[in-house]
Image (cartoon, rainbow, N blue to C red; front, top):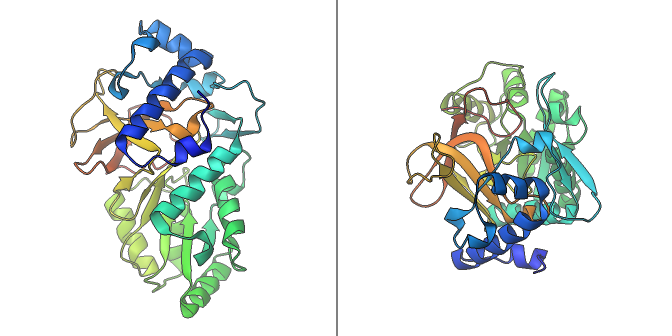
Length: 327
């Protein structure tokens, strides 16, 4: 079976999702060498898998030690994870970057509407100062596709950012400010806004610049500093090509081609019921040319409406640039 963007991004119900997920699993179990070996060592027969709940998920740590590819096409871009000095970075080799582009563009439109209605401002110094960031790739494209003359990066120029935000507020312009957590806190220490319509989207991570904070404390400071009622977040990572979004209160929802499942922390092949805390497993069908079934090092829980929360990290897990806030 050929997996195309039309197959992946036109999913609109659970039946379609499960059918495509099973087809992609069979393909990756045969064509992704490290995944094939992992399944073999588990003693699982890929051809015997008939339900999503039976699919084994590849531990995310394999992206640090192996090339995780299920396509023979040439690699067009390699994304790498952030991390403190001395840590081994994950590498995600992407053969069709257009799948990533369609994933984040369609997901943004699913949750927020037409990109061209927004001005995008970015406060992402840690990401800008290194190569290989999938987040920077996405933000660059959102800035360009917004076609707004004031969209752009601000790095450490907080005065210019403050003036731009006030100007956009005066015009009634829909605005998204996407920032790494510590940089947003740095900004509001010197500047205070009352911009109720502003969407502040924090990407998580103190990068060793500040003490870690529980989500409630962090979001209280940010809402007061920007004069807004909620803080938005995105849950994504180097090893995926899709991200979930929170429009407030740390409650995330996935786009139609992505799902989260919660595994038992003591038995990674066992699922736990909604409302209980366990390890977050992600199905990302856009990741068709790599591995779509990833067992992350994050802890979380699923709510009855299938939204989910991120509650922390496994002990001794590397600190990285996805949403790492602990409740």
